[in-house]
Image (tube, rainbow, N blue to C red; front, side, top):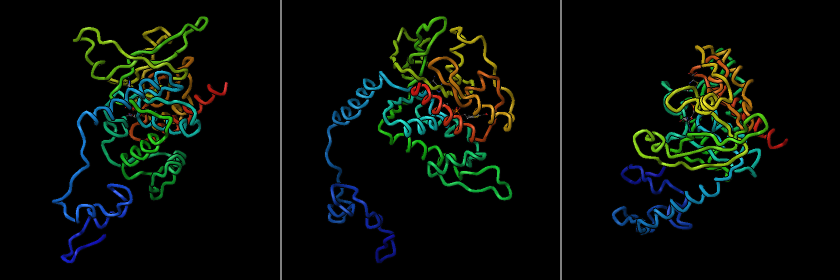
Length: 310
Ligand code: AHZ
């Protein structure tokens, strides 16, 4: 940290990476060292619009045919995306998140307290991501990340850096695309809409959706709630499965192992992981421990890789 003669911290001197312009090592050098002279490069508003919309609509076009769609960007969906995108840079992976902000329960509602607990051996995934964690004194069975947001933000940044991944946030999956496959049904894509549109189908005239085709859909929409367990519930209403098992009361030991072991292709073309699986199979909830979400994501990615290897 650089301080001036009055002992004040001089932030612009402290920054050594180029911030404005090529090869400019100090932020204020081009303004004669004076904040009063500071000025951004000029822009026209329409240029901002075009820079954003051109990319968005190119992505919509590009990902209309995807290889994998991950529904829900919670801890399980993002872990799935990380493993899959790293293993197969050739696969086009679309992540659809109903909320404006990705992260699911790990980011928002599920974290009443800051620290995040993960039972071993999920610490291996933290090491892979480079998320620092602490050992719990006198208990070798779990590790603690000092803030859930540190886990989610690191995971998100790693996932979004993969060139083969696109996150569409504020985008809701409101139906599944299906194909007859002999006597059964195969899932062949998703029907999507902006979440605010999905929320207003009842009080506005028809607002048609958009579609994404993909041979593999991975649903990680969490347990039942306003937006939870979406694909599981849809499988019941379209008679693909008879009824939901329904999530049971909290039992960390039973729940975490069961969720990881049973993450699978529930119907051809549809893999379900994370807490959504508890609604299908009638497993317990595990509450505020996240190892199973991470490892279920790893298993969901592996299930998807098996489909592509078939
Ligand atoms: O917004 C949802 C959340 O971010 C999103 N989602 C749900 N329905 C969707 C839809 N289209 C697009 N139709 C949708 N997105 O899915 C994400 C689910 O994240 P999550 O953190 O709720 O689920 P998870 O399975 O990754 O982690 C669950 C963690 C646990 S365990 C638990 C308990 O035992 O009580 N509670 C939580 C939150």
